[in-house]
Length: 136
Image (cartoon, rainbow, N blue to C red; front, side, top):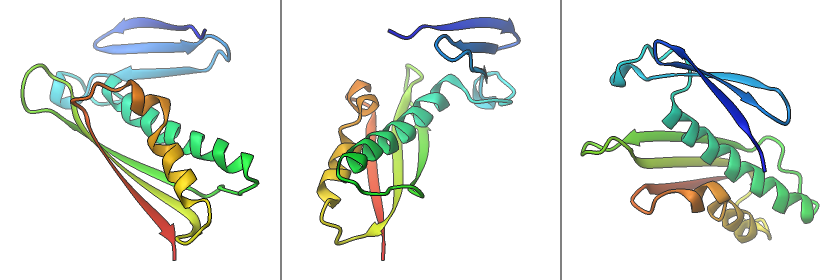
């Protein structure tokens, strides 16, 4: 179990402390939802979680096979729904993999990314599109 502590500092800002490490981050409401957009919004953190989770589980799968994945990148675009209630409607994840497209473990790595825990934790109404780009 991991505990995080969240303190509301006012003016739509929160301060978060990661229990195990003591690492600190802040959030702010986005400009389109009454905030100033001075930090990640809570829904931005879902996009961050998606990209980092996908790369992390790919890294785990790669390590098990002795594959070097350093240099892989993820870019996540988050789109909010236009209908009520306010929620994430779509995440587009673009993953760049520094390996050739015909790599023997391509299926394993793509499967690991698509099977990440964050992806499995999202509501089924959130559309997730994943695009893999392999080095040519």
